[in-house]
Length: 274
Ligand SMILES: C[S@@+](CC[C@H](N)C(=O)[O-])C[C@H]1O[C@@H](n2cnc3c(N)ncnc32)[C@H](O)[C@@H]1O
Image (cartoon, rainbow, N blue to C red; front, side, top):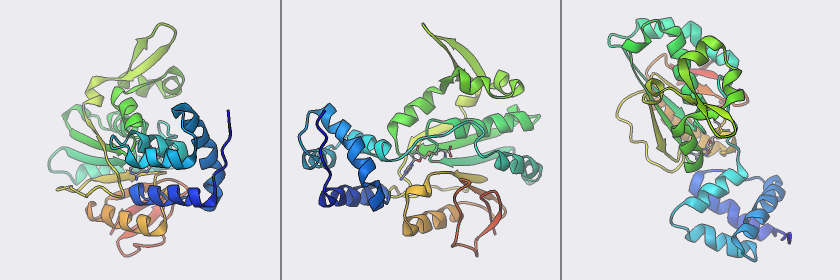
């Protein structure tokens, strides 16, 4: 395989395009990573240069190549019950949320949900902790920019080792076994899957169309790619969607240096709407 070298000028073309399209800010250090990942893609497509690939990327109206490009330069890594401390915190917060409800209705947004582990964890958590779970009207909006991860999320089918690592009292009520030709996997049960609305949504460029507020918003390990301005705008928009007292969950390596007047840090990258 011929290895093409990405010039600073070519890198800049990709950098500008991806920033404009999805708000991802690529530092100079990412040049080698982009070069490596795109070399593979250029070969697959039978193209001859980065410039040819760039033209292919910007003229592809289906958006598929953009999706590919995003997954080549970012990560979709996720897992069930990620950020343990946040689920512990939620355990203590839940009684207050329940007590505050006149109607048994909960609305949650999992923004940047990847292959679905996060929204399904929210449901498994609620099913485990609400004794009258079936009587609640619960809806999770789960969005991501990548159609590829969303199709996995919608199918709700996961490897045996991921599901078998969960406590039995949770997995038995949440999954059914699927026997494939060579291996076993597990699919989230329909009564949980039907509570999630998966949507393709770009957090940076798509309009905020929401009419109602959410009881909580998860946007974990997504903003790591965004620059300060993009992050600032997005957090500002999230805070308008949260009622007073509601939590916003970020990834454990993410913190806010702005919006102190509207969001208070409670610990473990959990912020509360003031
Ligand atoms: C590392 S995963 C995090 C998944 C999950 N929130 C978690 O913490 O386990 C980051 C996800 O953010 C998505 N993402 C990146 N930029 C985005 C954007 N501009 N709009 C929406 N989703 C985006 C990626 O496609 C990816 O699936």
